[in-house]
Image (cartoon, rainbow, N blue to C red; front, top):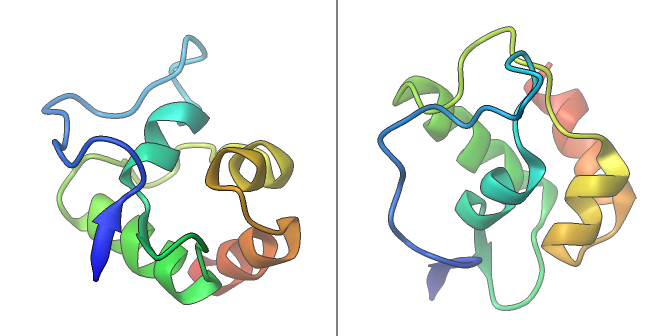
Length: 88
């Protein structure tokens, strides 16, 4: 059973923080697909890849810090770090 962390509605606008070059961690965490309560590195990679290909995330945008995203996803910083390395 795959669900979104928060609201399954994908926003029409890109996920921009006030910095405009960075992705807002809160918005991104609500769009990461998770199974049960844990966001795995593979699930994070799949979600980020999907969000990039659909134009919600722009290539070159700065992602949230590992700790911020891990806290919001309620997962280990190691999982987020692995996902970030997999995405490249």
